Image (tube, rainbow, N blue to C red; front, side, top):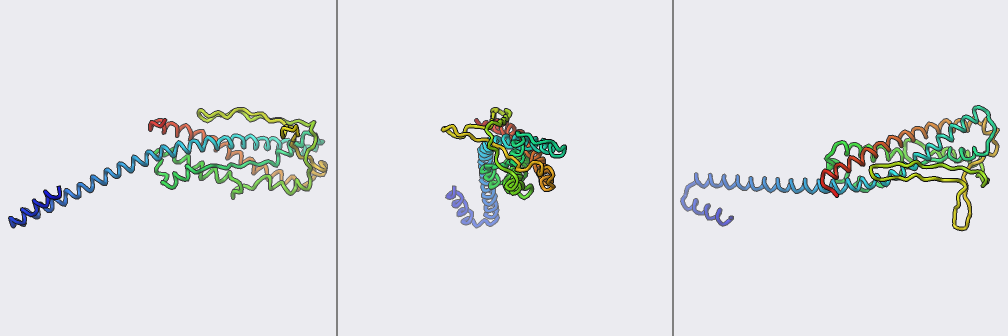
Length: 279
């Protein structure tokens, strides 16, 4: 092709026809520009196709991450609910000036328990590196941003929003409680079944005391106040009780909202994958 154009130019020069030569030169420039535009268009199409394919791969990975993280969310929510129930019972006993019941040791145990999300976010980080606009579905993009950049930071360990409930109680418990050693006292709770699309998180049952190892050694839970009557009158404990209830309620609300977001995100990601013909 280059030889043909060169021969045409040489003929026009030999004919000494400036007008024809200029028209030819302009035509050649136009052809070159058209060729460049076509090449750019093809390159853009290829890049868009590659980004669309990468989007599908990363969304599949994000879906897997969310399903794995949801198991922790499911467990943590139930532990926090146990803490909330324990808080209500302890507050009732204290403010109604009731006598100590042995099984209160389990309520004092759950009262100081706290939970955090430890999310795996490799796939979402890769999405951010590529630019979140790689996610073509606006709803999916927004909900993933809310989950990974809104809720996970607020529910992670040592976040800047709510203090650790265990840390709040730690010093007070060290000075005013001892571990429960009564193996006759029993406590049990169940994690209710939950599902996200076709992933089933089966019901689990826990009972204290429980066998700790193959040698038959037992482990139990519970925190026993050294002086329950003094505890009921302790203004510091009442203040801790009030503060931590606010922390736990706020955290529980975030967990409930996070569960809804994950249950919204995963099926919508699946629909996007099916629409793209992903197996």
